[in-house]
Length: 143
Image (tube, rainbow, N blue to C red):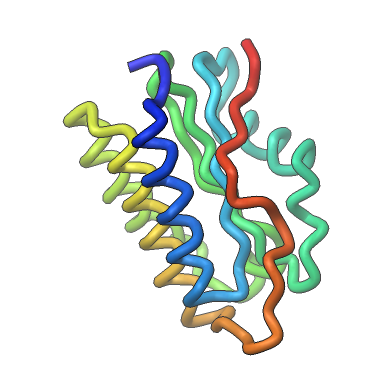
């Protein structure tokens, strides 16, 4: 699979909206076809290119996926990394990987988003005055 259908994109966007109702954390998804370097390094660059460090609580999360190269990474901002254990994202990655191995890419991304929201709720619960600091749309990078 080299792209996501409109229906899959809607599912992912709805997952972001649902997850962000439980947490003040901000979740974004960044997709491109190929990743010639390490996925984690690429995700870090995308995180800063998208200005995700600009959230008030430094609680942004980026799920990065390279569709053709079948690579992905999850990046949390400094506020998250200071509050959570070192292996915080491992269970989320495992859930995603299980779906990816079955070629259920959109389902894997959606599960990752929902799990991230559940995990973040423990450390960054939703606040009544919460504002959506980052767009919920998927970012598609050009190759």
